Image (tube, rainbow, N blue to C red):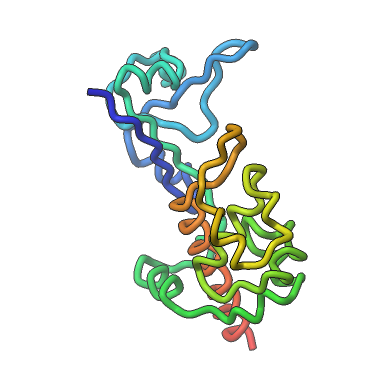
Length: 194
């Protein structure tokens, strides 16, 4: 039985992690030839080129054969996070939502830095609202960006029928939480510097 998976793990420095774990780089078959997948790796045995330590099977075909690619993504949000306890504390802390009324703050935040006008107009006051903003900036839901919260909430998590790219609810919430961590870390660092 084939299980369809999409595993993305955000880390501060993927190179440090991969230096410590046996892995095989995923491969993409392109018009220019076989190239290393930007983020994908396998932590299981898969046919590989011993010289490059790269899979000999295109990642899409490998998925069909039951191999599980894991994408390790560098995420600068974690810069300044000391440990897991610190990360959890930053994630649980209620942010100063009014900071999202300032373009100079928004422009420093991952994922929403180019959308200061939208964020300032909608003024999110919760993680679900911030997650909805993240979904709004994708083509499949951009048509809702001029609406108010009530109209946005009715349609934001409905899959587009035209095949356009949209953000799944789970991804939106995960990214929203990473923004909260970053915002709270910025405030913490500013207070320490004062």
